[in-house]
Image 1: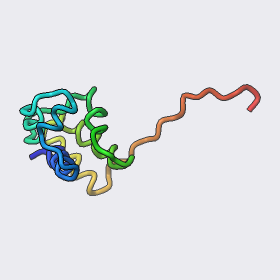
Image 2 (image 1 turned 180 degrees about the vertical axis):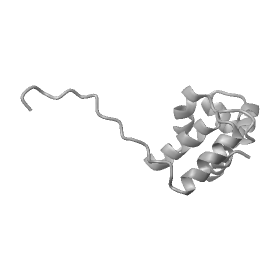
Image 3 (image 1 turned 90 degrees about the horizontal axis):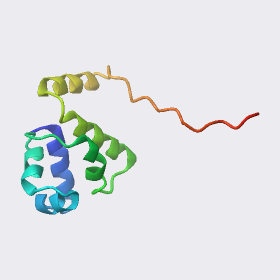
Image 4 (image 1 turned 90 degrees about the vertical axis):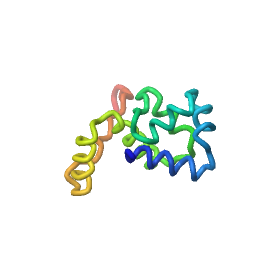
Length: 107
């Protein structure tokens, strides 16, 4: 099973949701959720936020959910390599984005 499938299964269990309940909430059929849990389908990238919104996640948990969901689009070999590098702390942490707010003149 893909690590995202494990994570999603844990969240469904923790929040007492069935695959069918979750599928209804996100507007897909239960079989699609089942395929994602088994690692046979990827989470649609534009809908990752919607999937995460179904659970009361703290910021760090939400980011872990997002990354795991994105990794469903990678070949298993690439995902394994990323995991190994992460364990060795070779992969740098995500870079914070700069604010798009414009500074007021004279400040």
